[in-house]
Amino acid sequence: MRGVLAFVVWILCMMVLAAVCLFAMVVLAGPHSSLLPGWAQPVVLILGWLVLAGGGVWLGRVVWRRIVRRERSAVSGAVES
Image: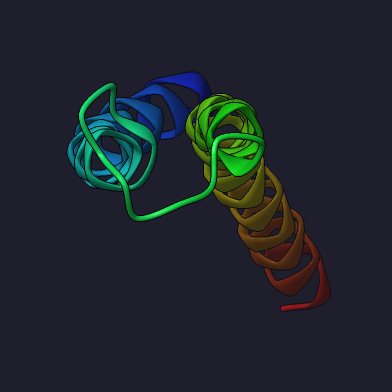
């Protein structure tokens, strides 16, 4: 159950982050954009890919750990009762 919920959160996060990062990277660092100087465009592209890759993993890990805490508190509550 834990893995399924973490996977669902990862998928949803990737869908949202993909849209946001794509828009930001195309507008800021796209081939026809002049919003940033030439040296900053590769930096924005790298940061965009890092956010896309790391954001989903980070939120999936948060959900995974939160579910573990709830399971432990439920078990300890059942033992004490």
